[in-house]
Image (cartoon, rainbow, N blue to C red):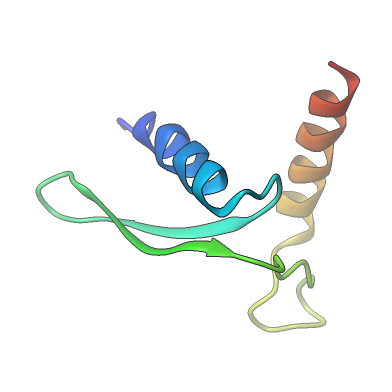
Amino acid sequence: MGLDALWEIAQAAARIAQLQLLSSEIARVQDGRFIVVDYANDPVDLRFQPHAREGMPPEVAGGIAEAIARFLRQ
């Protein structure tokens, strides 16, 4: 699907914003380019569905928590 560039964009956003935890809003347009809509949301909205309509699904939160735990174990 060609999403590897998202890692580079996110790392650049984190470096510029000097944050270790952030969320970004990035769109992929029809010609394949990525457009950064909002490069650093801080604080990150960690509310869950169904408590917050725009919150994240619990499965996604679990995956993020596992990724953070793996990172911290390194």
